[in-house]
Image (cartoon, rainbow, N blue to C red; front, side, top):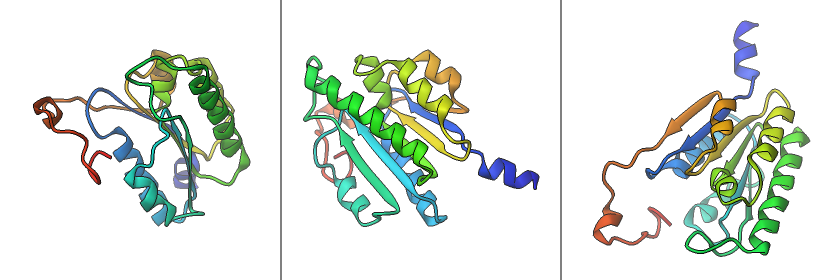
Length: 178
């Protein structure tokens, strides 16, 4: 019975830092969860483009549901009112998915970026964590994780860049970074 308690409890994981691999790690966990018969909801914040992983993840529907709540990209500029609205609608949708009881794992991809750029407040994200059913595992990705989110997490992994070929002018490659 004790093993069921730890196996059935959902934890909060944060993947942050300036290194590559945060979303990749979260997607790997999604594949592992589906392989174990679990259902996954992925909310992507600040992402609105067609990324290669979306094509693959569609094959797992309805075991994996992916929703994007970002426009093209504002990371090189300033967030518009439309960016803020999209992110806040996404946070509300993620909250509904978390409370629905349909999903065992919910990935909030780039939610740390969303709080950093004030698309929504860290306190709103913390409220989702507090109000989730006890069996739901939450993964939050993105650079610049708020200290309050880190404190609330059960597991925090910081991806640290040591070397990246981007510094030599290599652009994002289809199927690897994009």
